[in-house]
Length: 335
Image (cartoon, rainbow, N blue to C red; front, top):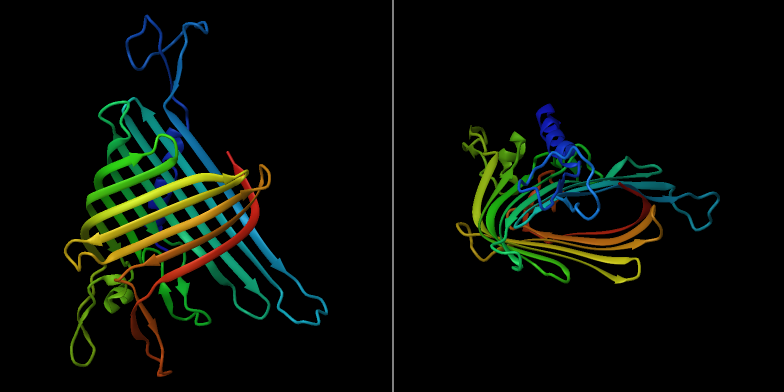
């Protein structure tokens, strides 16, 4: 990984150095300014505390372990661990709001007689600023920023010589403006942006030369020599619709649904990129939690490759639905 990327991530995840503090404003009949330095102690009747910043932090690890000793049915010893962290900062003052969250996930599986394998890998950063025209409206004008990539190289196991993805290969950035609806009773948010720029980064020249993840491939001569290198960035302009819904469906059982739909105006408009996560989180106590989840993705620009005729070359099989299912029980620390 390049040091400059670690620097970028360090800055993103540590934006909370300032916002982690709760900024309290004190209002009374004699004070007119929004920001006030109070030297004297006010009585309860004179004091009203307004919290502008709120925060949520959670780090945890899910484990899965199997061990055999003289087990007649057979099997391989294995252990799996999935590490994750979620960090959220919310700002709200009168008609203005700003919500920012970052999440990281990384999972590994070790099985007897087999190399260490990656099972999960994600870096995600979201930031949404909104403004309401009045205090009773459930709609707000919004600007949204979203960034996604991964930590380490990915492989089509058991082949560990030829990576199929890397850090910032791909990396995705969405930037747009639109309107957002928030349900006053349910934890439901719907965001529609008719003006969204999507940038796909493939910061590996070999991947870029092959035209992976939708970037323009290299120009080659008849002998296969590169005349012009492949582009490392692809920019699209289109429409984005996202929806987030959370609800406690039973006691200590919470459903979380996140859906993102994107269509490019300039390239095959109506063809929709789908990113859908559905998770059910079960709380045992303050530290022990379980989760069941699924993640479905479809992107017409991501072409599945496989060696179908054993000639050592990968054939392009076109876009395919990507699906992942997860089940985990582990320890969570919230602060």
